[in-house]
Length: 399
Ligand SMILES: O=C(O)CCc1cccc(O)c1
Image 1 (cartoon, helix red, strand yellow):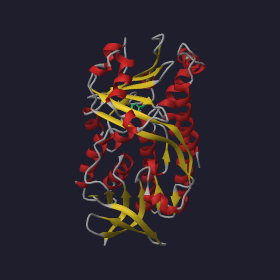
Image 2 (tube, helix red, strand yellow):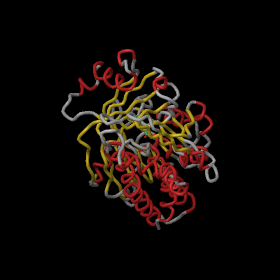
Image 3 (tube, helix red, strand yellow):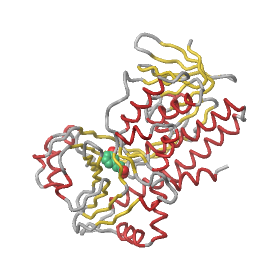
Image 4 (cartoon, rainbow, N blue to C red):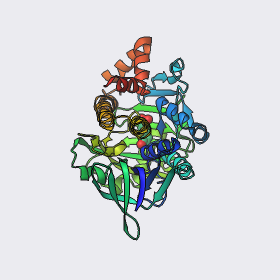
């Protein structure tokens, strides 16, 4: 049986950051991932300033910057009037060494971190290993792990469950995953087509309102990513079809047939938070613990913020003899509160702001946004919230 101090289930961004940070500190850590390699799909692609601070601290930011795209500006654009409300994270340069979003797809992060983790003396990565159950006692956790040929057992002091939205570990804890699922699905399309030619002064991050259909236009180094909501009653095949792709890009460029896509992904959107992040020696983190809509780019970042908090505490417990119950209960309180009061609230609000439109495409939400942008104090508050620095400060206040 493999024995380790910490077992991390799930090789997504939260799991990879957790395992790498612990192993870097010299704590024996095993990361298990169900797939044969880090998933290469697009998924999340925004890293916010506090996350960049963390990635710098573990020494991987330069490499990620070399495969990402800095995006200091983001725009709210009215498609009917072409009015733009602009925000610039550069205004946070007095408090941040990284006053910009880094647009960098999550597979680039997990690929880099899993490779570096495996090269550390205290780190080990096992692909095609999926935790399917566990037992725990006063001294540790024994995880039952499915491999292509067998069920194996890994013994650890602690198990971090970062095994994603469908987390098997969360299901075994018996925790409630409270919240709701939106009736509509979201469709994301990526293309190398120069979408910017059809707009004046498009930023790298654009929330575009429209009387008919809102969308997000997001630049990553190689592609434009387009996010649109879909009709409930329409089948997956229709939404993923060329005809629907043509219709989406007809609205954006006037000639959808001329636009080739590289990826098309349709997904359900949930707003859920687990009722307890801590179950003895089993700690839930990232999508295993909370889910939210993608507007604002908070999902991957808040997962990384979970494990930053948790690994700080595990280092104190495992290396300095700090009291485990006190710190791990505080992890639950701090990160569950932030998931509920910040991530859920803000993403639900971000979605409502995109949806609420009058016939001219403008709305009260848009008028409020313009007022915020024109008031230096409110604009700074807004930037601190959307950059996620505010939630980091709130977390520190929770005893
Ligand atoms: O608001 C954001 O930063 C992300 C929105 C988005 C855009 C494109 C695809 C996707 O999955 C999310």
